Length: 578
Image (cartoon, rainbow, N blue to C red; front, top):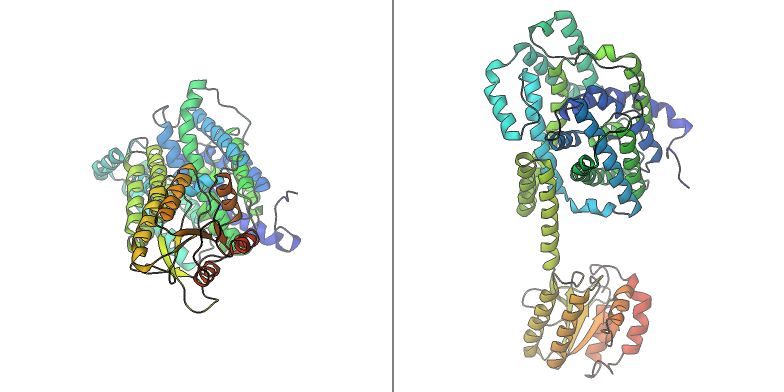
C-alpha cells in the first residue's frame, strides 16, 4: 500500500510547516533566476513550484528530496532550445513546455521498465565535470547581469565570455554596487546564521533600494511587469517534427535528473533510516514534469541545495514542498506587483552564489589526489559541456562511462590465492611470484563475471598458471567462482578452452564457491562435469589429502556437490570466508 506523505504526524506538523516557509523564501528568488537562465519568463519558474511540487510530494517515496528546476536543467533548456526559437518568445515557451512533457514520458518509461540503473552510468567524476561545465557557463551570464552588461545568453560559452570581456567598459556602477552588496550579504549571512533566508532578504532590500533611490533610471535593469494569476492547463501546439527534435534534449535532462535525484534521495534515506523506492520516485518525476509542462512551467529535476537546506531545518517529510507551493500560488495571484522592481543584478548575485559550489573545485582537487584517471574523465566532461554544449557533453559523459566500465571489466584481478594454518582465516591473494596455494594445488580467483570483454584475460591467466605450475608438480587447479556472477557464450567458449588446456597439462580442474545461478548456467552450457567445493579451504584440504584422480572420479566430489547448492549462496566475500 502506497503511503502519502510518509513520516508526517501531529508532533512534527508545525516544524514541517515552518520549514515550508523557509523553502518558499529560498525557492522564489532562485526559480525566477533559473527561469531567466532558461530564457523563460519569471512566471515559468514560479509555476514550476506549484502543481508540479504538489504532485511530486504526493507521489514520491523519498521524504526529503525537493523537486524543482535547477541551474543545470535551466542551462540545458536554454542551450537546447536556443537554436529552435528566440528566447523569451511565445514559441520558445511552447518548446519548453513540450520538452517537459516529453521528459515526463521518459521518466514514466524508466519507472515502468525499472531503468533507474541507467543513472549509475553517470559516475561521480562525470557528474562533477558535466555540472561544473554548465555552472561556469551560467556564471558568465550571471556576471553580465551583475555588471549591467547586455550579452546574448543563447550564445556558446566562448562567444558569451567574449561579449562579457568586451563589455566591461560599459559596466553599470549601480548594478555593480547592488550585486556586490548582495554577494556580501549572502556569503556573510551564511556564516552568521545559516537558516535565515538571506536570498529573500537580498531580494526585498534591493527592491526597496531601487524603488527609493530611483537607480532604475540610471540603467539598473529590473524584472518588469509580471503577469498575475494562477497557472492554467495548457498543451503545446507543435508539429510532430518539432516534438521529435526535442526528444534528445529531453532524454539528456531525464538522465541528469535521474543520476542526481536518485542518488541524493537514497543518501538521505540511509542517513535518516527510511527506505526509498527508485522506480516510484522516477514516476513522481514524470508526474511532476507532466504537471509542469501542462501548467506553464519547465523541466523539473532535483535540487540538492534545497534538499540540504530542508534537512538542516529538521524537515523529514514532503510537507515543506506543499507549503511552498501554496505560498507561491498566493504570490502569483496577489503579489506579482511586488516583483516588478526586483533588480536583475540582485537575482544574478543570488544565482551566482548558489551556482559557485557546482563548479566542483574541491571535488576536482580530491579526484586529482585520489585517482588521476577519474580526474581526467571529469575534466573531459567539464570541457565538453562547456565548449560543445550540454547535449554533446552528456553524450561524451555517457560514452566515457561506458569506456570506463569496459576498461575495468576487461581487466579484472586474477590472483593465485594463499592460505595460512588458521582454519577460520580466508584465502588471500598472493604476490606476483606465488605459484601454488598448497603442495600440488593452485586456487585461482577470477574477480569478475566471465564475458566477452575479459574472456581472453581468463584463458591467458590460466595458461600462465599452468606454465608456472610445471616446476611445482601442480596436479589440481581450483577456480574460485565467488566473483563470477555470470557467464556469456564467449565466456563459456573461453572456459572450455581453459578446461582443455588444464586437461592437456595433466591437471584436474575443480570449482569452489560457485553460486547456484552460476552452477545452473554452467549446467545449461554443459560445463559442470567437475568437482564443486563449498569453500577454497575445503578444496585444498580434500585435494592435498587425497590421491590423484580424474575429474570424473575425484574423491569428495559427491560431498562437495551436495554442499555447494546449500552453501554457495551463503558464502561471504573472500575477505571473510575461507
